[in-house]
Image 1 (tube, rainbow, N blue to C red):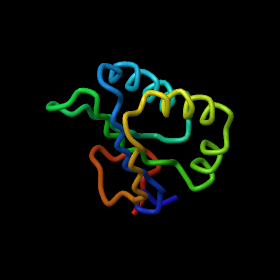
Image 2: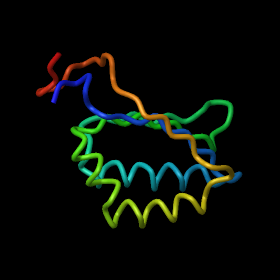
Image 3: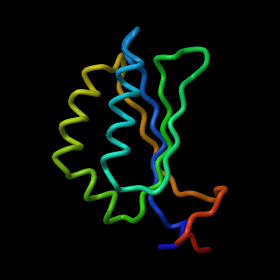
Length: 107
């Protein structure tokens, strides 16, 4: 699948005060275990360490769909939701460019 066609999410989550570390642990665990993407970037806000931004690029539509319907996604989702101070923001997107290019990226 061409890189620019890979489905992606930009996600913002705000943990309850003091729960940011646990949120980052669970979100990182989910990304590592899912096997659904070749690249993701998780960011912590300097001004508010309880805020997580995640940019995930899925390998394919099928990989995204498989992750979203997996038992692991449900299990982690429930525990993560319990940590949140407000509903998460999820924006569907597609990549335009990234450095470095990975094997399999094509125009």
